[in-house]
Amino acid sequence: MSISAVAVIGCGGGGAVRQVEEEFTEVKQMAPELYALAETINKKGGIAEVAYSESPRQDFAEQKAVMECQRKISERYEAKVQALTKKFAEEIQGNTSAGGPEINEAFTNVMKVSSKSVLQGATKLAAPKVYKKKDGQYRVYVVYGMDPDMLNQSIIDQTKTNPKLYERFRASQAYKELEREMAEYDSK
Image (cartoon, rainbow, N blue to C red; front, top):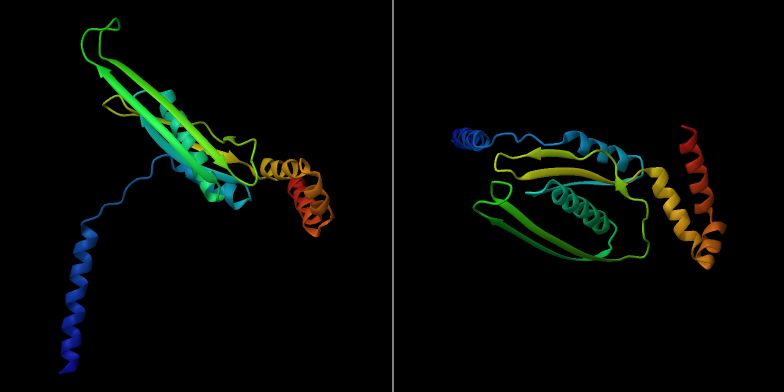
């Protein structure tokens, strides 16, 4: 009697799972090569993030995507980030000198970052991927960060700016190991 109850319970559960799976479709990832590049750089010891943003203006979309990457990088390294973003988009309908609607978009961003170390030299690591929607909006994907060589050099440069910290760090085994690893990496 208990065997038949188990069989009934087992059969009933499978149909519900199959029904839920049928409600979902796979979503294609846009700009997969940028995500792959970021993953490769992160695995090699660098730092990289991918972000996207949308705007009626391509340059604003790219700027906002870069700032989102910077925020993600700061967040990963436990930096305190206070971002105040003010966006204003206004579309004026009617006849303009260009013969169509005029798009005015003011975009201001104030970003304050406090962290124990400042990473300098971060940049876009590949050309942005730009998509234009039917409604005229641009979606721009960027990959931003530092390759392992630049990251290592940035950390060493930052350490050298503080003489006492530099002396302690240089005397440590970690400095010797870091130099050896950088030399090995450079020889590849």
